[in-house]
Image 1 (cartoon, one colour):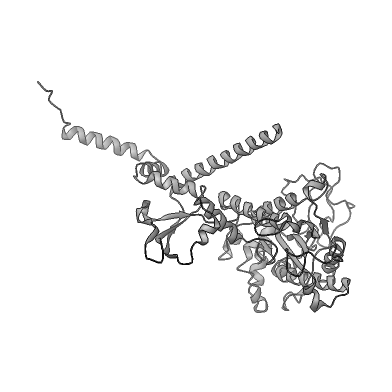
Image 2 (tube, rainbow, N blue to C red):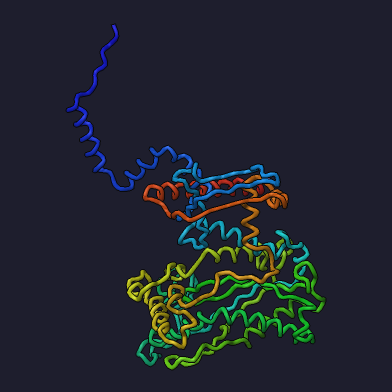
Length: 487
């Protein structure tokens, strides 16, 4: 005789429901969101999307479709987000700042490495003969706006040796007898904030882009003069190519690292003339740095400032890795150095990575007194009608600097767009020729923005995915290193 199935009574069901509700009240918001997420039927596909974007910290969600047809109207490929979780597709935010999105910043640094390296060693559409062209690694600094504390490291040298009796007009000592490690919060801070030229610092940042552009023109003029060639005919003999990255120092001032190269009249595919040597280029970059200057708009409050580079300038020839020792600047070292700094920002100098909308955000910002004074100076000078074109308030979070973190001349090497296209084609398992396809193939696309970011549990899961992929890359690097050692 079959057993009789017993069903819970209404009272028991109510007790079970109350127990579940009581348990749910003990859960945090993240735990509740995690239960919702993992019980969702689309969780597995959502995880695949986030793994595909490398655990991006703030993905962008798009909705739409893409359809590829041939001349006969036959559909070769069709994709629609209506079959995705939430009817949307996650794509990378592509933020270069490591403080904002570490996975995307790493990818951007990798692209920068190949962009700079291809201009030194060839590849990515650049001929390998470019290795034989004169090349320099140049560092241009900002001038001094006032004495600041310096890092002394492990040396016995003190910060700023001066007599204890020497004081500035504000009654503060002109020197510092301490030894500051690199991690000391005093490094980069002015010895006397009242003596520090904050308007000059901010206006130098606002004019640094124009100063660099004029510097490039001045280098070309000095090259023409040294070679005895009319300036208007220099392009018939050679071209100047460069890739430049900006870096914030501890004092909050930008300085530039640049790869400068001489090519023939047709760019990297043509050799420069025999008289265009690395020594000639070295003399031109140094003399141009001493001569170039720009002027800020005149304002009654600050006058007219002459903006120039600092006196500290380094220029080193770049050698091939195969013919260099540890003390020589090599192709790979320069590319890695530039790629490292492209993921950094003013946040590494103690600033913030987001725009300031009102003055109270400056007073509440988690920054040191020096950076706060620079931001406040940007805000105050931004009210001057004469300086309106500098947009100082809009760029107060970058301390007035308005330029891109990295710039390059057109013919230096490949582009970010070309590198991203090559990566997309590789991920699809094809080649660039397949991507270009038949001219008769028509692709129709319609996409629109539908959201961004994560919920609490999604953010935790994405962070775990990013960590897993980072550990996997480290493991692969260790395996490769062991293999190279055994060989």
